[in-house]
Length: 367
Image (cartoon, rainbow, N blue to C red; front, top):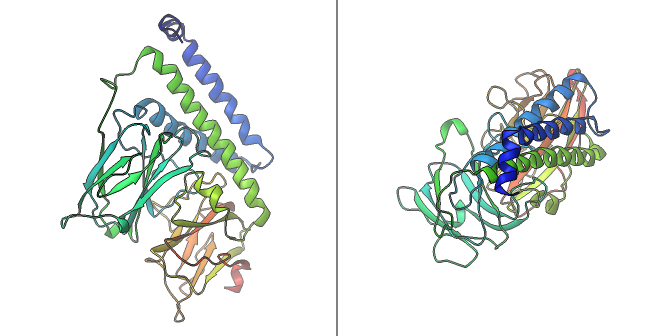
């Protein structure tokens, strides 16, 4: 778009009006046959669009220059997507695979963190993995300080590989007990920037808005497609397609067990984990029908290796229900007045992979 045309479209309102019209049209994706058709879940769908729009605008407008990188949170405590992990703090960063970067900071006391380089920054469904490193593979100073170089060419010391096509970094800080641990502090700088400043231009504004819209639309379509896949095994937790998970932003050191759940008021989902393999950590979580984690700020909606109550034989019983089943089942996850949604189990850095997280529906009265 020439400078004159970009100026004209901004001054006559076409840039903004086209953005609003396209955003309005995305709402029709919530009417897909795979989506819940009741008013409660449709409302949650519209709310999800606002979350994904916030994320897309942050990425497209405020963190889009790979020469002036900064970590931001595509998913956080209130804007969520893709069965985001309540045990995680996520950081994202737009990068250019032809540049070199330095991440530096202090690891805090977080149980485990990983950094992945990814091949796309504009679609949740096209984030192929181009490099991975985690805290167990890194050197830290005695006080927890660290430095990590990110580049396409191998470097000495802590080094995260990427490819010239890499466009994004994803950081996962995975806690055992968030209330007792200190998050890692990280900064990033480009070592060989080409741009002179980070000031937006008239020409860059409309493409940034369009990028945000693309993110909202692709995330909605991706969510619909995945929930349609999970409809084939409702209330079961089989081993998921790991390549599909990794290409959608997943970490190659995490094994994903993903599905949908659906319960009536008097039902519960009982998940019995026996022979849990040795791993960095494991967890299980609940999400709503749009794959947004339930409100972990105030309610017990996830459980992990460090927070779970174990039976005498080392097994774990998890109960998913809309009301507390009592003291006999301390690993109770609250559905928060939802009666269907997504769910996800994870094994982090495990060498053994069971075929499923065994689950069955029971009557609450049976418990």
